[in-house]
Length: 250
Image 1 (spheres, one colour):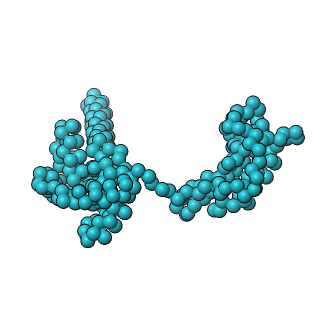
Image 2 (tube, rainbow, N blue to C red):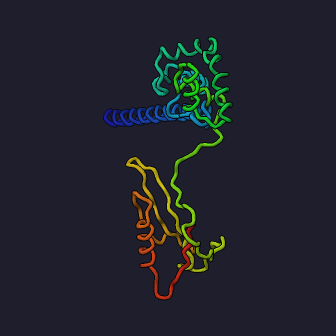
Image 3 (tube, helix red, strand yellow):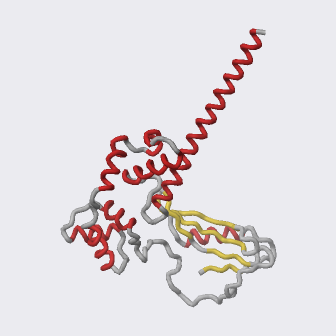
């Protein structure tokens, strides 16, 4: 009987330990979810906001709001948020003090407005530097993000396959009707540029308009004729006797 009681007690202890482990894991998960949700609420989805790397002031606000929401101590969240004890206690005093950017904001707004709202933070930073104002580019970026100064047009240097008409263009047999009643009746193709860690890569696919599936494709590091011609040869090799699809490209 004593042995059975001991075995039962051991099983109960193991169950208690497992329940406690699950409670601890749930608390940790609740903290992580609350921190991520609070970060998104705090930073929003504005350009320049980085939910994975909030600033010290933002982390302090996040700790305060999360601790109040979960009913836990702020100290228990320091490691999860990634803020030192001293930084957290410094930030409330700093936030209650005078705005250090009050003198800088009008200058940033002026440079942004003078550019017809086309400059990003780097160009605005250069404008300020030309005026003899020495501030960090990161500080300018935070000010512009905080006050909604987003450039109206951002030019991206992307590859465009259209270079004009070198000769008379062939007839447009498709006329924007991309419906195909059967396979290998109508194909469409174009070149697409991708940026990867190793550099730029180019994809040349041909798509069947019947089901939207790729017929063939080639990948290379240069958007040249060999890339398109190789794709075309691979696609034509899949055709059966009598199949002569229209191939549409820009």
